[in-house]
Structures are given as structure tokens and as C-alpha cells.
Amino acid sequence: MNVPIVRCSSLALSLLACSGSKPDLPAGWEGAHAVTSFTQAACGGSADAPDAPSESIVASATPGSVRVAYHAAHFRCDQSVEGFARTSPGGIDFLVQPTDMNPAHVAGCDCLYEVTLASSRPPGPTTVTLYRRWDNESGAPEPLEIGTAMVTVP
Image 1 (cartoon, rainbow, N blue to C red):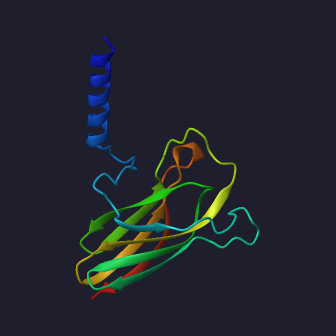
Image 2: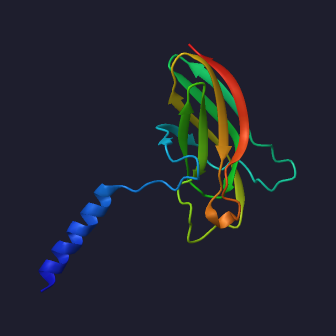
Image 3: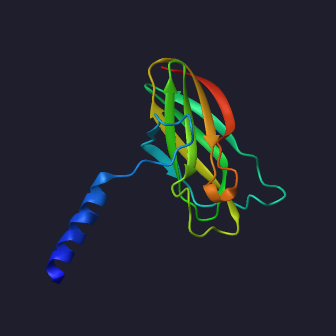
């Protein structure tokens, strides 16, 4: 009797693993795609420190792509984040948010991270905007604009 149950469980787990899941994106970001060029450095300091730097961005362009360095990205301690991009004819918007938008447990501290992300873009002037979104447990899960910059993609 146990054998059929094990086979069914294995099949169910295989189907779940292969199906993938849709990311938890805010309204207006339904067509966004995951950024494949993304890095998150280790915590670089407390977001609660009196001398903590403000979040900021520096955008740059290389042939066929734009890159954003997101400085002092404010998220929970030990919280992994990911990036998404949505494009328009004259620009690209990036969204950085936690990989787990509904954490079962939350850290009692906040950290500042260095994050870099990039995406392909056709040549020409491009408006680059970066948004940050905290998890749903924060009480403020709507995207916050961190900064906008203009670059020209060669």
C-alpha cells in the first residue's frame, strides 16, 4: 500500500518543481522579466545607524545594455533580494525586492547592501529608473522610486 503513495508523492513533487512559480510582483509590473545579471553583496552596515548613507543609484551603459549600481539598498538583515525589469520604448524600470515576499520569520534588524543589475537595451537614449519594494510583512509593500538617470546605450 505504501508504494503507490510514494509514487504519487514523487510525481506530485516532480510536477511542482517543474512548473515554476510566478513571482509576486506589484500592480503594473505584470509583464516584467527577471534580471539575469544581478548581484547582492553581504550586509555593509546598519540601516538604523545615525550616519547611514541614503539609498542611491548610478546608471551606466555599455554596447547593448544598461547597468545600475544600487548603493545602500535598504532591506532586512540576511534577506535575499532579486531584480526585475520592465521596458518601454525610451526607458527601462528596475525593481529590487525580496525573493520571499511573505517571510514566516523576519529579522529584527535592517541592513544596507550593494546591489548591481543589468539588462539588454537597444542603442539610444534611455531613461533608467530603479524602484525598491519591501516584503509584505513590512506594512509598506508598494514600490518606492529610489532614483532615475539618463544614459545613452552605444
